[in-house]
Image (cartoon, rainbow, N blue to C red; front, top):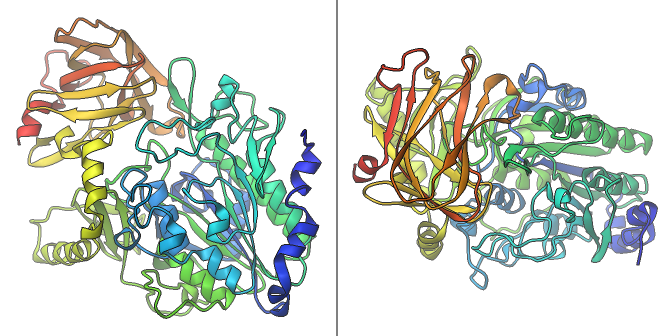
Length: 608
């Protein structure tokens, strides 16, 4: 059956169906309970917004929400998107839920795989409190949104539910750029499911705008029952545009370039939120609505998947509600994603069962401007790695100690030596005690072993080398696996789009990159890099041919003279095959005979 856009917006989730789903219990609560709108962007670091200090991203609507409400200086989510989403919807850390990472979680059939069976979910709690519940956007849990408590749903509809099957995804339209190959995606040419009915829009329709239109339609028809709306944005995800496997963002409406940028994406997120806020005003709901804006984890190339410092964990958190939340200065309170569950429950007047073990703490006192700390530390997991922070100290995922002074200078954290002073030793000891308390539970040992045995990062420590007594990491992303042997690092490519990448030390400005590689993958590879001024657009590459003869060969690439890379990666542009790397070295500018600035001997790293 063909569906027009109007039918798409109003059809299966229309006002009549919505009113009927609300039921009598919700109407009995009257107008005392606020309406709640939770917006979760995908892969957006706090630093990407103007109100968090970005110099060129224009986000006037989010900036206004921050100035009229409460902006939190420090909010953490897991660098792993699914771990962050499970924390947010359950108020629990992974040692309780088992969801440490997309690929380190309970297997199908194990306890905890269906999150809503082993945990109380936020939507279910609010539904029991009399709220009508709505979900729009992406849905990546194994179970259906209804099992979480969402009565009304407009979500991206994958063709096959194998997002977390342990094998490369076979989901139709699983990548944001799928429209380039004529497949339905969640941006252009979206295929959606509204309350169980499938809807296929054409390329004239933009998925994120349709999700927003669905919510806007229902905010204009709110009756006496309070509503909880969760806008789980698809925007923020990057795309790997063809040809060449260049990593960038999908284009957004209103831009002239074929390839989008992070700036375009962030500003379209802001524009969409501005339109949704205007709809609240037009519907007369702005004084009865509380809006919470956050993101699951940090931005690609900067934070997502990273455990260095707090780049992967630091996300925005803004709370706005002109009728109920006062305008306050930026809050120094420490918050992580487990705190959103009890906070929304308290705002809604919902009672959490006494036997439900909750890790989050309500930050409602901070929304009222009350002095005092909500909690003394925050936490973020990434598989078997852990990040933990107090107001003044942080241990990142590689157990590096950082000093944080939020009231001085730029408020960022800086690396320190554990040998510098007794107070640093004491801080590190206290943080490690927290890590030990929240470490992988013995109940989840099977998940841990599967992670170490079958994921593309079979042994992360084997991909690090020891330089001057500290580890420097190289990691893999894309459809491949990383193996370690005593002599070299092996990348098993299962298709295009694999990247082996590392962050640079701040004092490194290399121009020459040399490596010793042998391969059984015909085609070419590319050195790619991102510069600080690229605003997230990472399209700079240098190609070199690969000879699939199994012989160790030196490869060298010379970057442009004015290059100032912030990150460098290796991208095999071929299909399935194997690449082995003995060492990679960065050399300085204008001095071919100089010693390397940094060199990774992977064989010695593995034995160290």
